[in-house]
Image (cartoon, rainbow, N blue to C red):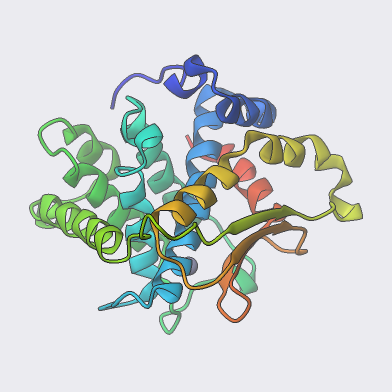
Length: 270
Ligand SMILES: [Zn+2]
């Protein structure tokens, strides 16, 4: 894999990245910082995937969880700030590494994934994301195969999987594009007060807020798609590490505990 470098994102010193840089100052290294940013983005984009699938009534052949992962992954190749970052392959591999670490972690009962679950197993997500990353540029991404152990039997078709995922997002963007004459339907972002038990993490959560990353993703979706109703992202304390889309209320719930969990996992990843 390419040598680790200080993420280009920080060199640009844009406001959002600066915020997340400070946010991740509690992480141990620039690699940890990149890991937290990559995975925080992926979590929000994955939930945005659920939002779009449900609000736009996008056709889904297969499991919604897989579709949301593919939407989130593809967004990294569509959003200019992410797509044009030379660190993109490393960001994507950080997301895959998260799922490998999750697969290796001994989990409490409520976090376990069973065969009947609507979610894929952690290691399936790891290999799916490794495959899509490799498939995005097989000629230059052979290091992904070495790092992940993705076997040739799967790697052979990863370029096609990548093209399929990207095509789906482009199709959705063109078929559900917001007409220029219509104002964007808002996706508002609210940061709820911190629960007492998270008081020690106030600086970390404040920097998530300051980064403006969540608002940027919400604004992008709001501007791009012809959404049927006002929607929102609620960042809050939940007493557990979670993130989900509440279809009935049209809300993405992003638990502060999940952001803290990403930071904890960063320390476990070699
Ligand atoms: Zn999901």
